[in-house]
View 1 (tube, rainbow, N blue to C red):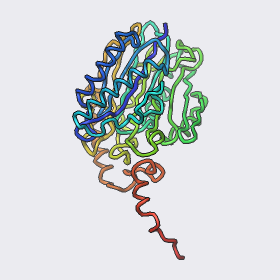
View 2: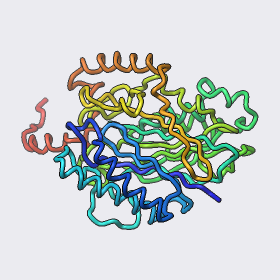
View 3: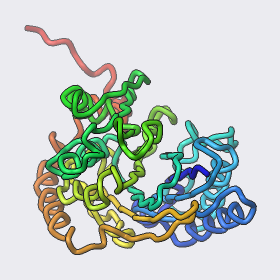
View 4: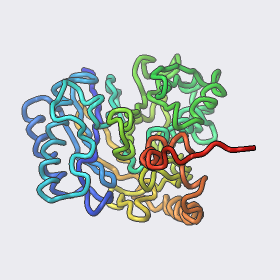
Length: 371
């Protein structure tokens, strides 16, 4: 039997402002997924949160993009939205861009990362949840997990990883994709994914002669862009990702090692700023300072015939205290720039925030220069 692991997330309301997912929303979503499990739609589930996002981690045997599974997630978000409206939470239903479910959440607001695979003798996975950033925030750490021997020692000392990995990269502006193999096309990969606002890693597959079949993804990232769906700025995309580990793949320790360095990502306040990513426990994923800095939560599970054993809240470990401390120092430095670059996003990225409304107000007031 193949198992499908799906993470579907949405911001359906928070308190106060953009800070925290209310417990009533979690309860509402849990009730819906409990019913879906009882009916056989799901094998198992876990309702998580990161900042103001509600994250539904689900297992089933129905493959990617399944209508019943996505409908269960949609119903969970709709019930949570109704609860958010009762409580007058901020941004109630923010990521729900349609009232009618159309068979799949794609293009309807929620973000989604899914993988279908045959469970190995032991199947450890990490579910990564981000708040206050966009899908490009995963480029650097996913590259380090699967292609950087300075992060992942297995690329050097594990014969099963010697042939590297295959990266599926999306061009989210042109709506195209390309597959690149590492290590042979490492430089081409870096040339693309270094441009995080345009090229994003969607999936990673094992190279030849790995214990994991080449057709099974070993990592998947949600790449949904809210501004493209809504036609207007409604918030950052707050991506999620899944990564499988061990036995011919990076160890769990190698999957989370990239976050010992709080790299810079776009997002933060009003989705318009650059700042450090802050690894933290789920309970501490409350972005309060300038609506940030960007949070990431890592929940580790073992899969057993589709059952979720866990989670282990990985970034609750004190070993990440120094990364958190460095992130706060970097946040201090970036905040001193105020509305100036490099703290504020460059003009091309500001086109997808509230900046167009400012430019509309100034329309007609720009004069030609007279040399």
